[in-house]
Length: 169
Image 1: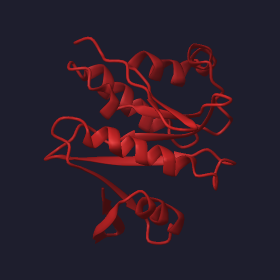
Image 2: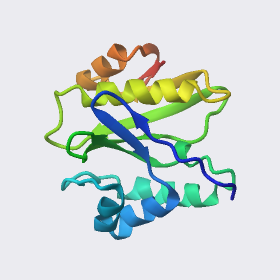
Image 3: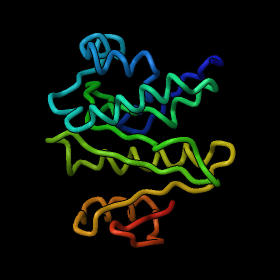
Image 4: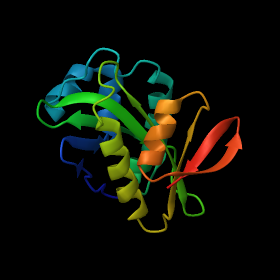
């Protein structure tokens, strides 16, 4: 595997950290070690429902001999002032035909503060600055008005309806 570039994105209030393969392993097996390494706090429930996804990401990051781990991994969304993980995000694989899909979620108790809007905007700016990436896509269930409003506030525009509503940045 080629040497991986360390990626960290910062916004006014947030730090976005894509976990390396070793950090993903720590997240799954020894979260307290990851907390010490990143000097952060993982609130209870941060990984609720993500265990299977993180296992898949771990396999993908290990198998990526080109060190494109940022496209395969979980990004921790850390609130800068106290280093608390308020949510997670993930690109769903390497870009294909100039597009990459983004997924995201907040840990319970952190909604309504604009954290995800700040993070989605930063992730989209980073993604389209990468070679060959022209668009970021995301989907939201029709009944998930909060997610739909978030995407629209971040500059996404609806482009398809196939069970869910698809947006493109």
